[in-house]
Image (cartoon, rainbow, N blue to C red):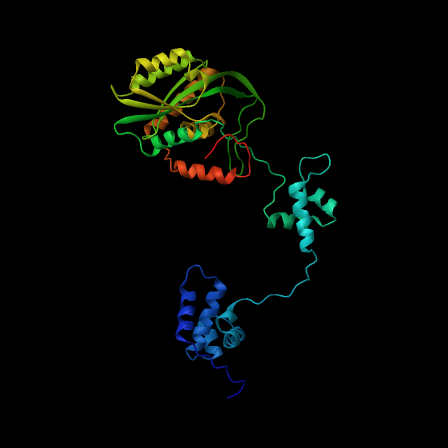
Length: 363
């Protein structure tokens, strides 16, 4: 026999079970799976050449991982630290960039950019970018929020969410709101249709032909929508829509209406209408909490799928398009399923606004 003798490789029962688990586990990296197969093949008595043919690698690779396992056992299958250029940025420099990003602003600007921070600290732009990326800092981004200051925020959230997740038996739960000032926009030039390799093109400028308001009531259980368009947005139009809801509701059924705090919902004539209809129960969402009304999801869909990219030469054309969408939606309605409990909502608000003082509510 020529060549160096093979290092003897004998596995304990525990090591064999671990290697077999590495080999079978779907989430194991391909490198770890390959190394486990090599060690198992060598432990079965194969030579390096036989193990290489069995696994599908060269004999040199088999020899490397055989010796690594004999020397370091299971820990030897991990990658060793790779040599590289010595670190040039100290922890103090990283801390200085983070502190400057969070606590200061550049002169004459609202936020830092990679270039302005690099100039201020004397670091390369790539280094600043890596530091920000590592610590999740995004000075160029700014998002908006609106936290309700309603003194009965907690009670109203529990009331509305309770209707979604545990509605009363044999009752109708309707989410009511108005999408006001929907504009009938006509493009100044013809729309260029989509073609192979080209999206649809519209001119960025437009001509206004007037507005309409969509009054809608979404059935929280079935997804059906009762809709009505009016040119104005007053309590008179809202009363007409309430009569439309009453005509569509089963006789004598208990109806729960979820609405926001808009002024037209609380006028004296509207209050008298509800007094004449004792089977109607109103549930107001907290102020500045339109996200709690499921009908807003329907408004988002009709805007995205029908209104935003539509071209309308008149208000009647816009209203016809809205009613066509309503009819198509109601042919195959699909409810928007609410899954967040009231406590989950409160917990998320506590986390997101724990650093804010005087937010106006107590959770």
